[in-house]
Image (cartoon, rainbow, N blue to C red; front, side, top):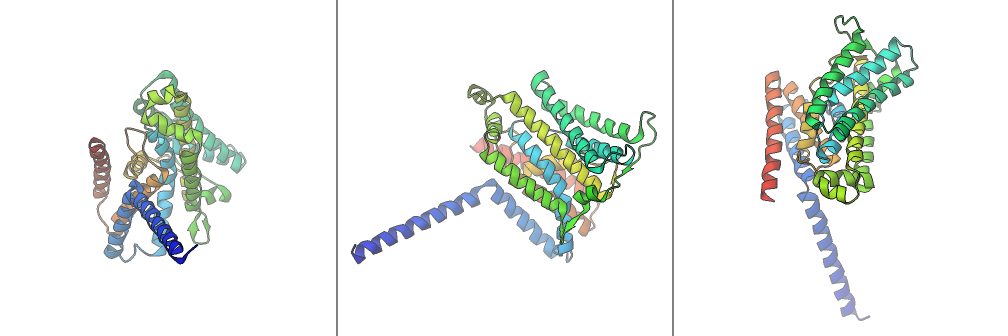
Length: 341
């Protein structure tokens, strides 16, 4: 081969490499996650300038720990919303699961890890009940999970106080191993953050590469087309609500482990933060769109906002109002984008 031919070949390969690099970069920077991640970086930069304490490792680890339970619940919520549903009961499922585990461990004298498994089972069963009512009885997901929100919260008080219904009280978690799930560290890294990362990797792979994961997107994008393609829509929806109950239970036990006690108000109102994280992360409430990575970035934004209000000593009402505004803006932007497409 002549030198001229070799140079031409090399030049062509270089051009192809440059084009493919540009394509990859374009894909990265045009994804929803990149925009949300950029917003997170800007927010962190603003907070670094606004408070000398924000960028300290201890504070950053606290922020990461604080977002871990929200992010774990957001994994399940992402699958629910992608499938075209909604789940308002995750906070209450977290509470009743943690309370069940604490009750069995402390007063039932169950072995700690068996009590932990029972707590997870409670959340899983209640999540499955959500799915069965929605898929078999055909009750609207909003109404079903709103009802379960109250039912699970009532069961939390029942487990805490007994049938006499006395003043609600917390139940201690008296096992270092179980408490380590929420309060432990490996080096300087809080263990809940490690759990969150593991779950994010597993479920991101699941949604992107496993048949059932792709079916979740199909159901949310076009239920009728998915049904005609042979997808069992009812089973797909039953799965996402069941697994969301499991993840909410895990987050609840982790939260109780951090406090070394299961409080009756655990997870109160947390469903708003979870839904906000998923929507901010790019999921569409119309279904069919969204990623777990985006939801985790959304959870990080929520955690940074809450941390900002603490560090800047701003009143609590501003925090609540700001989160509400963020949710409305995220949904409004999604609707505007859909109209343009």
